[in-house]
Figure (cartoon, rainbow, N blue to C red):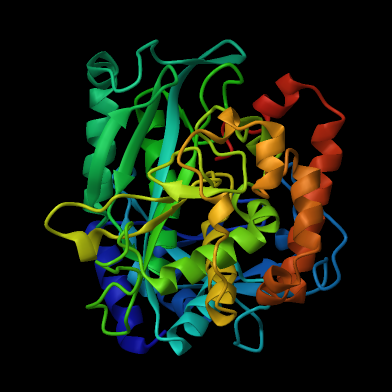
Length: 454
């Protein structure tokens, strides 16, 4: 970080009266972690970072340390913040946060840094003439705690004005807090589940979009808590209710960011040959990719047929039961609004890893000029197709468990090579550990230990 940038961050923190500044990162289990520095030491910490044991990236969801070469009691990485992410926290105005890269003592990016993984994929895309605009579309529940149980804050219906009214104080404050942190709002509505909400935010360049998602998660949970409620972004916090997705909308632009390269006015869906190649790559890597975008035990309670969470290897125009949806664009802004939506993704994922993996899969499709199979294009709920028709069209169930998804990822060398050995090995070790822990416990244990982590 340049000296002028450090001085500006310190000035802003002092003017806001912040006394603690948190350096945050997202770990291999999708957990947001961090350390804080007092304002008196901020300038030196901006220059040198904050030391963290390498073992933290081998820590599972239950804080059980896994055996991973290069991640143990000896050695550390440094949390080095990105000054562009500095924000005063509206819900805790004496505090601020910055999002960090994980830097080795050599002063180079640490090989297990999730944020650097995304940066590397974006650099690879730029070498191919592409820049991505991304929006992560999250769903979440508002709940109250009654004894040892969490219960939904209301029993309203999908898109219900009653649900909007009940939660308006919390939602309005979340919106104000996001806007104060420079995050624009797109749409808001209640969802299918009791007490479930969807508040979508504006698209941004890919790295900023991933950063925004971390800030979004922190803001939603903390504002809710200030109102005596709990916000859960877990994939399936209430087994009997709808699941929480985190759909990834993305489009590919030229390097000047003036032309959407995914758009073609002559195509029936208004998408280009380049976009079809990207879809082909995603479809080719979909089984392993799910381990990056739906990485928790709780994820596979959500990924089930007929639940609008996608459960099959298919794509389609405006099909919300397809793994990859081609949304219809907006009238009058067709080029600008053309995008693709990846749906088997949830908030338990690390957004840098999920987005990095999605881009790696799509770029492989572009490099190899893959075409998505026309037989896998589905314009109905795939659950309506017979087993024979699904087999004939080469449409298969997505992995049905964390163990299955992890095995698929272990066989996908394109995704593993993109991640690099240290990140990939530590990530897989934690997936195996989570399966081992949660597969021997009951549903109540799973829900309890996922509800408020995300």
